Image (spheres, rainbow, N blue to C red):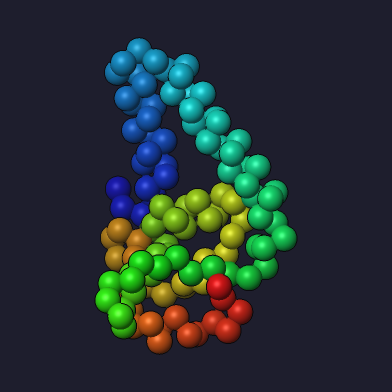
Length: 109
């Protein structure tokens, strides 16, 4: 299902752990990941006021910017970081825009 990559990864971890008879280990991995997110959230709290873009350069003028439905967004939500990109995204959670498309938020990093 598009738009929930982290949730899908958790579900896949549980399914794989069950298939190989390692349910406890799978749950431990999920719990450790959630605990790590909680730790990182505390560490990044001083930086959480300013939104952050996650981009990948496609060429000198265009970027792939990640937002809703992306794994980045789901992790940002768990660690308390605001995503600067609030525009539309595709099934995989990104949009391709010109670099000037990132100039909409003066406070973003």
